[in-house]
Amino acid sequence: MAKLLVIESDFTFWNEIRADIEPQHLLDLRSYRKDLRGHLLKENYDVVLLSFDLAEPDGFHVLEQIRQTSPHTPVIAVSEFEYADLIIRTMKEGVFDFIVKPFSPEKLLLSLRRCMEDRNLKREIDCLRHSQEYIYDFSQIIAASPAMRQVIDTLKRFSKTDSTILITGETGTGKSFLSGAVHYNSVRKENPFVKINCANLPETLLESELFGHEKGAFTGAEKTRVGRLEQAAGGTVFLDEISELSASLQAKMLRVLEEKSFERVGGNRTIHTDVRIIAATNCNPEKEVASGAFREDLYYRLNVLRVHLPPLRERRECIAPLSKFLLSRVCRELRKKFEGFTPEAFDAFERFAWPGNIRQLGNTIERAAILEDGPLIGPEHLITPDINLCLKQEGSDDGEGRPEPQRDLSKQEMQSILQALEECLWIQKDAARKLGLSPRVLNYKIKKFGITHPRWRKNKKVGR
Image (cartoon, rainbow, N blue to C red; front, side, top):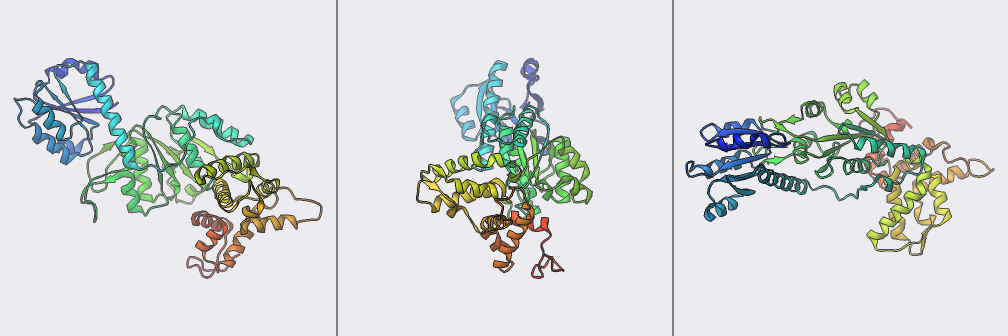
């Protein structure tokens, strides 16, 4: 349902068709003679219907006011006169459509639908969504383990609702990927899907990214910017690493969830947006709430529909089919052809703990595909320092055969990380590169295992 502003001198015609329009959209009738600029600063509209009549020669002046006050709101011109010069001039001034009175409600509704579709398309392009591949059919998602089959069944049910979803799980388990699958199987699939990583930007830039800003709101704000929440109107917003939001941004997001409204940075006009929120975190949200790092009321608003993605080491049945799928994707990108993996390669895959989960598996396969020249990918190109260390430790555990894959995985992860840190003189960025992990994943693991070093300014004690 769109909120429409009609600017007209005579409301007789609009009152006649109002009953046919208002079941689908909200009509707000305003006279030319009222303070339109002040009204537009207070209210937010999806479309403006502006009358161009001889009795009101100020139509283009009002159009300019709309452009200055609400530059991203589309305008449809309405007139009793079908003059070619008038139509051409309004189109040059940027109106979306020109319709001539009297017109049927169906004609207006068609124009409004096309206008909204055009607006959503422009917002989606402006959003510059990442080119990640999404799967539109849940049955095509690899879920060989019982745990993942249950996750997919749960997300299928969730996609049919419009409630907020909270996805938990370690980094690299596929939270972003599955959130896209939920969106494209929901009633909002024709509208934008917008992803925001709450950990990638400083607080001030993240606030502008989420809510947008007005011209002159801060140094460098040379023009008004529509935020991601506004760009996603009618669609879905995926908030990755929601636990990284500052206290002030948590309060603003709480209002978005409760009232579906906000103000741009530097603005005082309330903007209403109809979006579905899917949030994700690699932390334990209950612990974050207990420690005071995350607002309890926001947690309850987010924790409506909850799903947890198990790490790759807990769904080892998925490793082989995931490896084949990831290899086929890499082959397309590199334009190389492989028959598959050797048995020794699969053996190495299944014995490793995969602390970086699917993301680390994909990076490892891509590296091997670049280095391998033969028809099959073997372990010699798959084994990076962290994988090699873990396999050696498992092989030397006893002399009676290979140990169980799940055995001492946490200990192996910690020892792999310690080995890499020592070899890289405790420089985390270099160690992350050596392990084939992102710096963020390595930092998460360092905190998880309580690893410290006197070189690190944040640590006061030496800890291993």
